[in-house]
Image 1 (cartoon, helix red, strand yellow):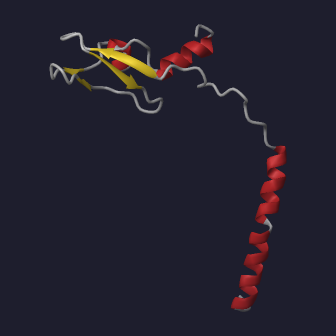
Image 2 (cartoon, helix red, strand yellow; image 1 turned 45 degrees about the horizontal axis):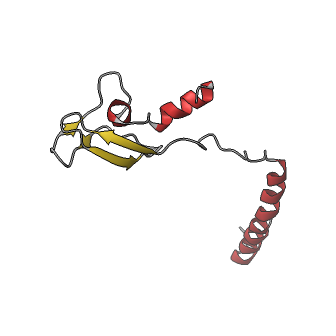
Image 3 (spheres, rainbow, N blue to C red; image 1 turned 120 degrees about the horizontal axis):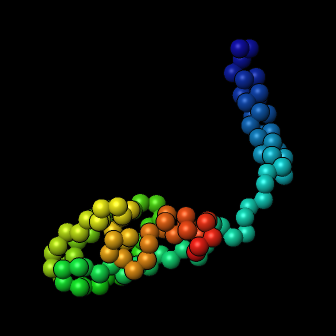
Length: 109
């Protein structure tokens, strides 16, 4: 290296061209979808306890599925039934978001 001063000049010139390069790259990028695929999925679900018939409204997350549910009325812990994806599929009024998305992609939703 010649000197610190020339090194910093080179770095500043290189970093100064980054916005120009990213702006040019954006012009070639594909446009965003106007209707994202998760638009229209139902997020509110009514979970009904099979022991005491207590109904609770919960908002489903599309990222992490619920594997266990605790009923506040009868203090029962509920797990998904065999073959079901999560609590929402077993005891809920609506299927979980990943299954809703798959059904929508197949044209049934």
